[in-house]
Length: 134
Image 1 (cartoon, helix red, strand yellow):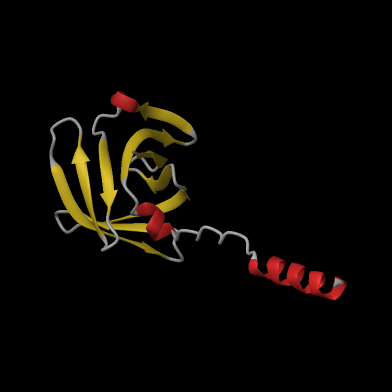
Image 2 (cartoon, helix red, strand yellow):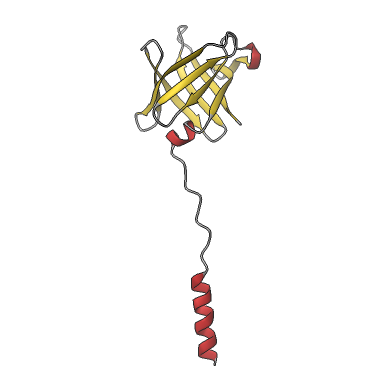
């Protein structure tokens, strides 16, 4: 009887399994999950523009097929281009609607924040900080 009870318990416990862990999204998948709104621009570690104070504020929508859309808030213009992550996912490469290439260092990418950096015309490091939009 005891042996039978141990066997039943063993089978019962063996049949139970923990919930499968949620798969970890790749950086490309995180980037292409929705709309990203430009919320602030930082230069040399301090915020230089934020919110509606950003002259050319826009959103970016990245798609899994490597295309993106940039929607301007001020004039309502929409621009399309292509994107890719390069250099072990540390470089965000854009080809804009004019065919010009732009590269930015990817500083942070989570489900809620996208941050990339470039050197502006004044030779200052600028971070563009975006938030994920519902």
